[in-house]
Figure (cartoon, rainbow over the protein chains, first blue to last red):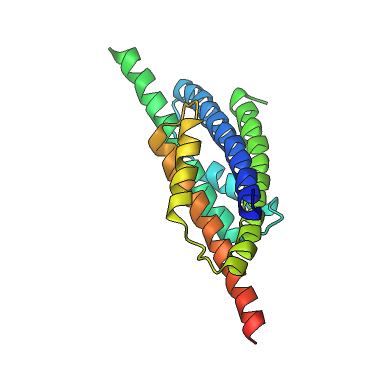
Length: 97
Length: 97
């Protein structure tokens, strides 16, 4: 095995952890959707999203730049919000059916 | 503390782990950049990127859809490739100066 393959295996291992965490995050987002539905709140919460951004950029030690972390979490937040919204609509439809 | 806050704290914890892993992945990408420079290879490797996509979509247990996982990893791969490229250019410039 050459050095390139060694590092690629390390990346593959990280990716499996990322996939797990991203799915956990999405699952938690559906739990939040459940609560928001009860409270009559919308899935989109700009103040909370800015709080998340501040949290992750403050805690990043690099080498990714603040801009890169922001771009990554824009996508992550977007996917969490989408799944939260899908979940909320499904529930709403069931309720009104 | 209300239920919404409890889930948000859980998400904050996941986000710290995500930030760490994303930075680790970026660091590994610079190591790969180092090797590619020695071998005269470009940072962009479409076959490897497709392999990464296949790996993550195959190992995802949901609730994120395959499309969502693909969108997330398009961003993750893109940021890793960028940092790999920046690193390679810096090295190349030092060498030719």
